[in-house]
Each structure stands twice: as structure tokens, then as C-alpha cells.
Image (cartoon, rainbow, N blue to C red; front, side, top):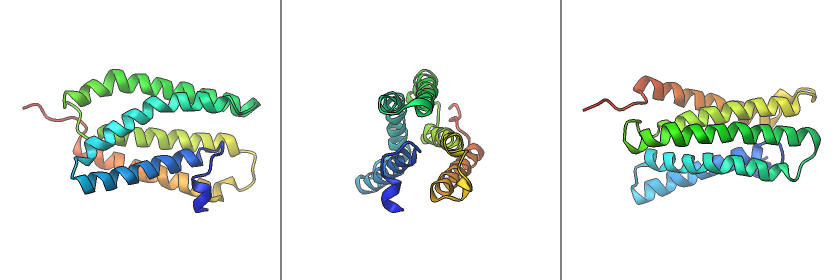
Length: 162
């Protein structure tokens, strides 16, 4: 199961594995170099948001029929997400109006929601698809992201004006 978590396939399992591995690596780098981790995660997530639409368009070149449609819809969704992130969140992040780590938490919840929807769309014909290892990991990722979002929401996303 561990190797399938990072293997390339259409179900977005490898994308989730890459995201979690990147977050883990950034956590270790931030701890070791004593960098502000929330800011480090925000810049990593911003770069990831910019790369996602291009990755889905690139993967659409190698798939057929229904998977092509799903890959292009994902590319469109993440392109819209990229535009919103660059036009709305990035300026607020740079002016310190948005708290550090807010962009990461918002994106993780958005990414988890899109992953759950993708998984349901791609595997709706399979019997007991909800009890596969992939679905359990995706649902756990969604629940953890929702928990982080609710925690951050209680703290607030916006810095108070001085």
C-alpha cells in the first residue's frame, strides 16, 4: 500500500502522496533551519497552486475518453483557483493582512474536497469503492483538512490592524 500511495495513476492518489511528502519535507526543513513554517508552507502551496493546472493539462495528453474530460475539468478548476489565489490571497499575504498559514489551510481543504469528488466520480461504478484503502486515505485527508480549517477559523484568518 505504501508504494501505491506514490505510484502514478489517474485516481489522484500519487498527487496526494506527493503533496503530503512535500509538506513533510517542508516541515523537516523548517524545523532544521528554524524557518517560519507557516510562511514556508504558504509559499510552497502558492507554487503548487500555479503548477496544478499545467500538470492536469499535461496528464490529459496521456488519457482517453472520460478521463480526458475529468483531467480537463480538474485543470479548469485549479486554473480558477490559481487566478483567485494570485489576485486575492497573494497580495493579502504579502501585505501581512492575511495570517501566515491561512492560504495553506484554505487550499488543503479545497484540494481535499476536489480529491473526494474526483474519487467518487472516477470510482462510482465499482462495488464497495468507499472501503478501499485509497478512499479511506482521501476521506481521512479531508477530515484532517476540515479540522485544520475549523481550528484556523476559530483563530481567525486576518491579522488585526495595528
